[in-house]
Length: 212
Image 1 (spheres, rainbow, N blue to C red):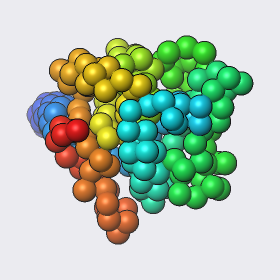
Image 2: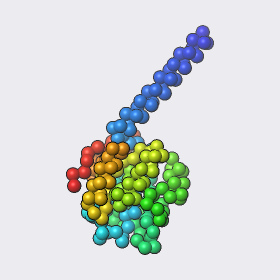
Image 3: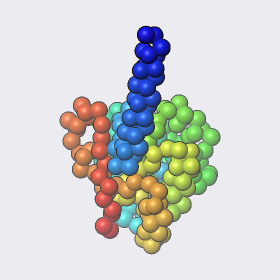
Image 4: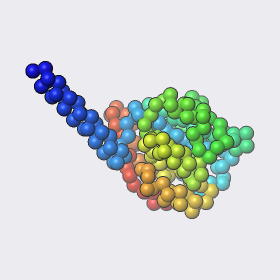
């Protein structure tokens, strides 16, 4: 009868919703990212900081690799610069392709968090669920951005070889604090290294701690 069919369809709908919720929860727990729902955040990797930050060249090299992978997978990149007038522009070497840097929206800020009104508006337009973050300083701007994103319900992934501070211990303390609530990855993750992988619908990020 129609009532039995309606009841069966309702049960199927509820089952599908439960399955989707479980799948989403598992995906989040294992660090599964989908290019279509992911954005990369580049936090304050500026010229003035280049000689000051602990292992800054590692940060720059990791950013260059990750921005190249993001381009290959059609993942949008959003950047910030802390008080550009004083601290300068984004380090060009963070992108392998100068045209990609020129095309990337980079917002000036005077807050610790990247989530200024302009950046938040841009992210709302992108409408992504997951964020991969790199930049400096780990214990200030990166950490505050991660906490703000988590508070907003986003899935946050830190590339640990892509973040640092002036002092190594500040970086370590920040990563320890964030460890309890976000997924760590290291040096751009082997699973992102093949350009041919861009044809796949999912990316997997390894959850290995930085050994530096």
